Length: 287
Image 1 (tube, rainbow, N blue to C red):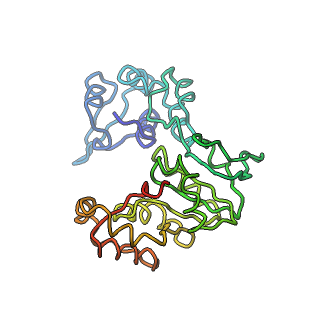
Image 2: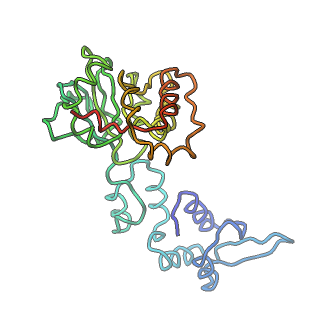
Image 3: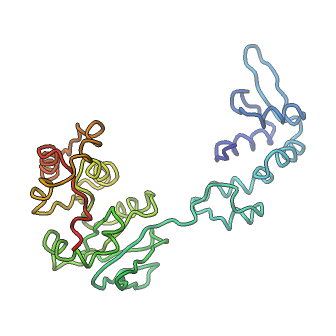
């Protein structure tokens, strides 16, 4: 049984003495409640409804069917709180795994020069030593300087070795502005939501293939159209000429109609990928 706020709302309505259409609740557990008399059905013409025979007995029987339903009020409160943690669930029922709660929200950040950011209103310097990165869990309260350019890196090998690509970043993005590197790991929308609340420019560094461009368009460009750009190195034409034909062929059927509306540079990259019918991985830029 999948526990949702909508399901809990229906059960609370039944406990309050209200009726629901029979079609509102389905499953073997519903049949069990009917067999045990906790729920009863009634017909009104062609319409069949379901109601709790006795509110107190109804909730007690729910607890025997599924421990997650032992306290409907507390579960409703937990579900309506967007920051529900495993600790909250354990407090409700003693079981921290009642629901699929993300215990590790956030994303990783990195930098090769110190960047003064703000975390929960306090100064936070981002500049971990080589081989180390920082994980920002309270991302809603993590604020970089307004002049920093956020560089999103898709591949973890590239992300962990930014110093070996420094010449590329300084040449293609700039050497007079702070660069804050971020990685969308673990996979979630946290990074994109964080970027949406900022005024900073965003540069996306991914693979130079149709799938990589599609990720950028789908996950970032559509939400940050005026601020998001794809990192396209000056020598990408030469590199694609010797790229992987197999990777291109694997992606062609799904992405051959890919269009980057309003982004001339990205449209040109797509055209070059098609011209050579090849793909090139970003790891090739690690020196």
